[in-house]
Image 1 (cartoon, rainbow, N blue to C red):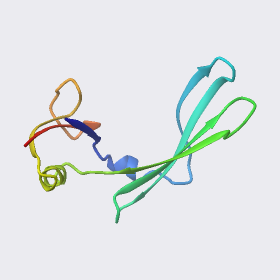
Image 2 (cartoon, helix red, strand yellow):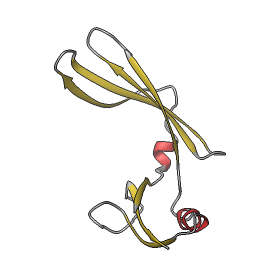
Image 3 (cartoon, rainbow, N blue to C red):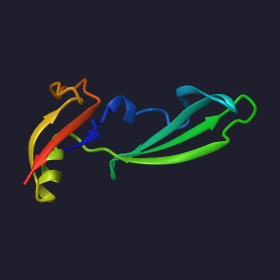
Amino acid sequence: MFDAFLPNIAMLNTDPNKRELIGTVIHDGLGAITVEETARYDPLTQIRHVDWYWSSKTEKDFWQAALPMRNVFPQEMPLLVASGGLRLIERFGDFDRSQLTAESMRQICVCGL
């Protein structure tokens, strides 16, 4: 059993030069920490290259992390699972076992031999 993000065309087409706010957390020593991201998608490799930037009130971009994410489209998943010697038994749209739909954010795959 594993999960993978369901590619979202709108997310894949975001402006690579625009930062998007991911969220804010409170750190005991640093106070409010914001996390922003930029992303660009390479359709040839199907990799979404994401960069996360952490900032505090006193220090912008004190930490940065690159997160390359391979996108696996729904029709491709059964072929990849089979090429690994497994069989896709079930697939869900979330951990609550809801149906995989166009609005799902992930593919939950249950596999066997």
